[in-house]
Structures are given as structure tokens and as C-alpha cells.
Length: 240
Image (cartoon, rainbow, N blue to C red):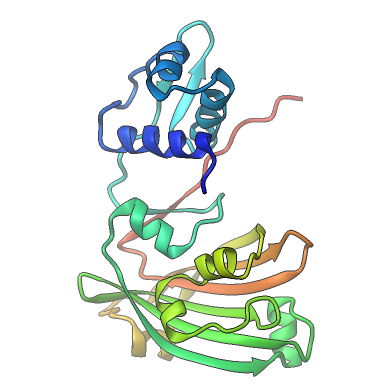
């Protein structure tokens, strides 16, 4: 069950995204929010803290909390947080379908070990998934999961959400993800599986994901047709 502050965060976030609290407007006061959600001030502050961290609001001393979110022209993926594709799809209302192209067991070769960080000889579950939006193949996800950490991945699990299965069914704690974003020329496999037309380059996010013990459990390369998506992060200047 989700924590109370997380439920409130999602409720306010939806109100912001749908325009109930428009860009540059102030949210209701903390006292009003506390009364509306029948919760403590600390719970509201934690929800507002999440909204601030995600770039939805900015606290203004002596005035309140101002909305700084504007609806993007393209579908956005969060770079700074850890969000499964299923969660991103629900948040952005993409209505995407997932096609599982490859689901197989492999062993990390020296080359795979060098490229991913998995130890040589590690048993891995290799998945290729095409994400289709409006019938077009726009994203190719290539995943390698440590089989001992996330065993029993089926085609149905791969089609829905491996993260949901790992967290809810296996009790895996997904803690940290390190990401790099590059622009790469489309290769033959991209053209085979995606609808690229005359597009030659893809936006590529490569990530390494670790559990609560600091063990690498997943390495993923997500290859996006760049004309449909943007990648968002929120930075807060650190005062020294």
C-alpha cells in the first residue's frame, strides 16, 4: 500500500497536469490542503517536497507554493527518477502497446561484461521489447536482468512490467539507477523493428540499475525515435 503522502502527491500532481492548478498559480495554503486531505502538516510537506523535486512547484517564502509545471509539447520521460515504462505510459496517457520480440537466457561474455558491468559468466535474462504508439514502433528497449535477482520472467511479465513483478512478487528493492543519454546512428536492428522512415539517428538512454544492497540487477538500452519524445530532469542549485 502506498504511503499517504505519496497518494496526496499523485492527487495534487494530477490536478496540476489537468490544469486545475494552472501554471504560475499558487496552490491552496498548507492549512487548506491539510483540511482537504484530512492529514497532518508533515504529510502535506512531504507531498509538496516530492512535487518540488519533480519540478511541479516552487515554494515562495512568505507567499506559498507556486505551480511551475507547463504541459510539454512532446511526451516526456523522467531522467532523474526511476520510473518503469508502464508508469510513464500511465502518467503521459500514451496508450502504448508492448511487443516482446526476444526473451532468452544468456551468459555474460567478456564483451557483455565490459559493456554492462555484469560479472563475466553471470546468467542474464535478455529481453527486447518494441513500444508501439498509434501503431508505430517508436521505442526499442533492450534489457539484461540478473537472472538470480529477477528469476521467472515470462513473456506476459515482460509485456506488462518487470519492475512491478520484481517489487511486488519477488520483494526486490530497486534503489538506484545511473543513466547516460547519447545520440546514435540507427543500426540494422533498429530499422528492422522500429518505424523509422528517413530518420537516421535515435536518442539512446543507457542505464544501470542497482538494488538496495548495491548489486547490479539490470542494464538497459532504450532507443527512442527522437521526433516523439523529450527527456526531462529537474535541477536545484546547491548553495555553498
